[in-house]
Each structure stands twice: as structure tokens, then as C-alpha cells.
Image (cartoon, rainbow, N blue to C red; front, side, top):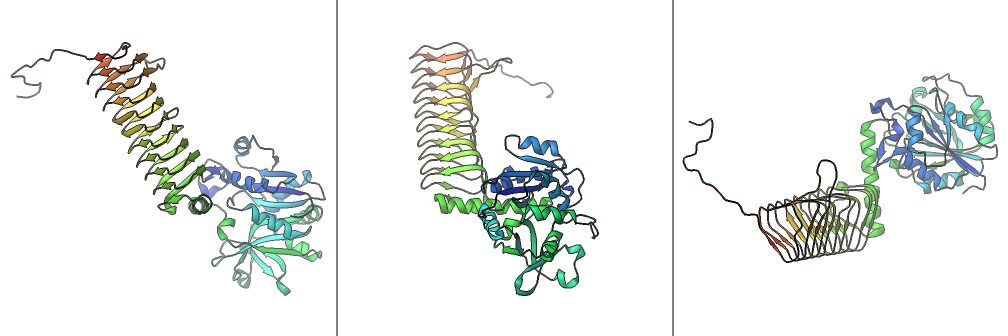
Length: 456
């Protein structure tokens, strides 16, 4: 790293018309987080003196999204180009600082690349470039004798020979603050776009005798800008591939298909974990050793302990799952669910604010909400807890070793003692003491010769 104090300027004022969205472009998400958040994280890793964000379109929303961060904000009320944008932040930056300029719509930039770029500047100028087989749309890097950078020429202003150059500007550069004030003041908008280009400062610096140190980025995805939905989708897949590779290499995660894996948060895994295809991870998720997750499953803000299997097509959110449990297929565990060791929640079962004891089973077609189940409870198919009376939620408490027959309705508030057996088809409206058989009997009537209305 350079010994000079560092200030970072992030250009985040663009409207992003090609996104065709009411949301500011820099708040469009990659891997579940705004693009600007990724850039700010990379900048923060360098521990700069300050991070200045130049904002414009949708500024209130952008500032509100990052209200918890220590940032300096500079308004660019008119979109007059990158040079004009940097000039809005410059008054707050001391002359002896180096300025690292970043773009908020380049979300995959790595801290290691930025560290190398700042070190390359050595108190002068450094420029991050990339070689593209198809450079259309980018400013070309013009080199002189010995490979030194002489200028950056925007495509609309380039000659045919310059357009043939495949090394392009990424928009990321490091410059000394004091001479930058002079160069920005000398910019003019006499170009095809009528804007003040920050890149024109490169030619001014060379004319003033300042060296410009280029650093070629080896990974084009790292400097890929996002201007429309197609580019956003492409960057999303690149980000997901990067995360998948890191999890496999660094944590030993087994993935059936890294191309069909989505991480939109933080994932920590133990040994011998395996995730099948088309699984989505959101929020903060922890998998202990030997956890397997089936295909087409979403995990959000949950902890799954060792040996557990989450089968296909499950949705698990805000839940704690114990050792050696079985969940699914087609199960939904809503926030507040806690499964003790070896509990089973099967197909088309929904739980919410439910604590399920060890070795208990809810295998089929049931809803268990605002409930506490003891150990070794068997919940029959079609059982529901009636926990809401239209105004308040009420709890159901079920003791150990309770057997609940199919198609049972448990009307809360309710307490069911240990060892109770409830017959199929029963509606339970009152507490049941321990070791009781609960049956709902009624007289069945058969009416022969019955013809339903509307039939001859």
C-alpha cells in the first residue's frame, strides 16, 4: 500500500435509464445486496481515511440504504460527466491524499486488486485496465513508447485506429489530490458527449510530466460495469460462481451443480456438507457437519445441526434444526420453529413459532403454529392447531408421548398432558389430562334414496 493517506471517491450518481426501473441503479442487487454495498465493502478493506460517495438520482433512497455507514456524501445535481462528479467530492479531501476513484456499478471489484492499484501509484497516478476481445463501448487506453500510458480516448471520440485497441479503461484509478484539482479545473466538455471526462486528466498528467502506472486486471468480470438488466444478470451469475468456488475450496462444501447455486447472504458449513441443485441461501445460514440439502430448497436465517437431511422443495426460514432431523420434502418451516434432535417434519407440513421435541413426528399435511410439542409425539395427517381467534394468537402445549389421530383440530389455548391419545377426526376445545383417551363420537345417519338438488 502507498504511504500517503487515502481517500476513496465512489461515483454513484448515475440514473441508470437502461435499467428501466424506479430504483436507483446503484441499489440494484447482486448476490442479494446493492451493488454499491459490494463496492463500499471493497473500499473499506483498504482502511481509507474517508469514503466519499457522489450521489445524484434517487439520492434520498441511496443515503437511506447506507445510513448505518460512516460515509461522506457529495451531491452531483447535474450529470455532467465523471470529471464533474469527482470535482463534487474534492473540496472535502486534503491536498496530501491519494484519491482512489471507484464506480458504484462495478460490484465485483476485489480488495486485493485495489490494494495493488494503490501501491502501483507510488504517490503518482495508477490506472486499472483490462484487455477485452470485444471492447465496444469502452474508452481505449493509448500507450506510447515503452508501453507508458499516454491517454484514454472515449470510443465516441476515438479514431478508427484507436478503436482497434483492445485494452480499455475500467474507470478505476488512483490520483494525487493536489494536482487533480488543477486538472479537473482545466477540463472542458468539447467532446462527442458534451461531458467533463475524468479520463482527460490522464493526458494532462502526462503533459505535466507525471507518470501513469497501468495495472491490467486479469479477470474481466471483476471490472464489468452494469448498465442494463442483461449485464446485471450476467454479473449475478459471475458473483454466484465466485461464491460457489470459494465455498468449495475454502470450506469443503459439496455442490451438485455450482451453476445452479444462489447465495444471497452468508453461509458457513462444517465437514461433509452437500447442497443439491437449485438451492437458494438467504440471510445468515449455518450448516454443521454432514448436513445434506435437497434440490429446489430455500434456507434463510437458520442453523441446521449435524446429520440432518432437508429434502427437496422445502422452505426453511428463521428456524433452528437439531441433530439427525428429517425435513420434507415440500415442508415449510416458518420463523420461530425449533426442532429437537431426530424430529421429523414431512411433506406439506407447515410450522410457525413451534418447538418440536426430540423424536417427534409431523409427517403429513399438517399445520402446527404457536405450539410446543414434547418428545415422542406423533401428529397424524391433516392435524391443525387453531391458534388465531381473529384478534389474538394462542398457544398449544402438548406433552411427551402424545398420539394425535388424523384430521384433528386443536383449538388454542390448549394443554394436552403426557401420554394422551386423541382419536382421528376429533376437535379438541378443552385441556386434556395426562394418560387420557380423547374421542369425539357422533351419530352417523344414512338416508337411502337421497337425490341431490339439481339432479333428475
